[in-house]
Length: 417
Ligand code: FES
Ligand code: FE
Image (cartoon, rainbow, N blue to C red; front, side, top):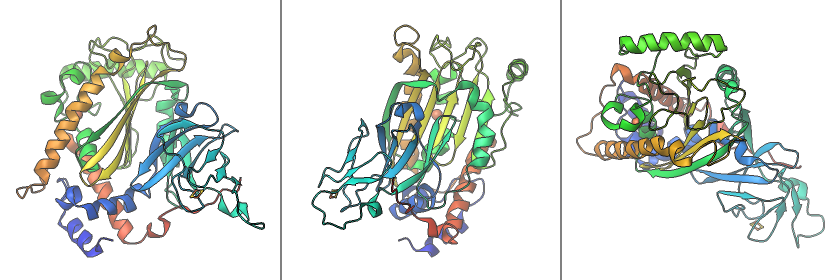
């Protein structure tokens, strides 16, 4: 365990509105602290509920050394469990995705129901009480079809987030979708550098030609850096969104989340090379393909775009101090037909290119941050979201050190069916 004095010294050294001191980005002991203080304590985006369409569908994800199993049970409810057998601790589901009506541990074949109850434990003696050995549950919350999980025994309140983002997301009916494509890539960078890179578009003009063909690089409707043309576009689109009853002004997410609807460039309606729709079948009951995009971000591991014709979820999880896994999932209406309504290459090419460019930027950032020559540098005004993020992160660590969350390291709720 890391010496708290070292962490407090690094936090004290941190300057507001500057990038973080080096160890936060490079040191494996700080990485383990991030797992404890942030990833084992916060709500994490796992997947869209459509990825668990049928009872028995499951997926797994790794949060540090902890594998979590997210599944749909026979009653249609989405549940999550530690993917660790209650016999001697083997991992149970070894694949990233699968389908099963019972969960059988590969080691000695203890069998669990999808509600976590232990059904069979062969050769155990008479009197063995299976009820005490159900899978340990992980908290689950569904927000407009997005599945969030939390490992903490007492999770932080998610109500404010849910209430704030639902009016923006619900018109897109993210729960009535299907996965059109999913890409997993490893970024050679600390997870905070991946988030910082994602939270600003200061780098976009020089690095993202495909993205900027359609995306407006300004982050606020009244962005001081915005051109006159942007302001006129924003006014016209905002008036239209008002007519549709679609919220668009920034939600009050503080440092924890952000939700806002912003337009595409004039003439563009979607993240395609030429701005034309990516999917002919619009989401939910939407009828206008030109709704811009709801950009929703939530600490610590999720950002998204909700368009009229598709949704993109981005999920990161840290692998080490200097490696992060990014999973990007493109969703279209559940009834959309590939080859008729959409083409996967057209749907994914802009963000595949953008992700590859961002991965290079973040890896270069990591290399420079690891150098003897690194010193924290000042954020530009357009990097205001990095200030929000690093302030949130510093508070999270400080509160962890103060013990506010120390007692809720893992959930120990046992499922008895
Ligand atoms: Fe799972 Fe033995 S460790 S059955
Ligand atoms: Fe980028």
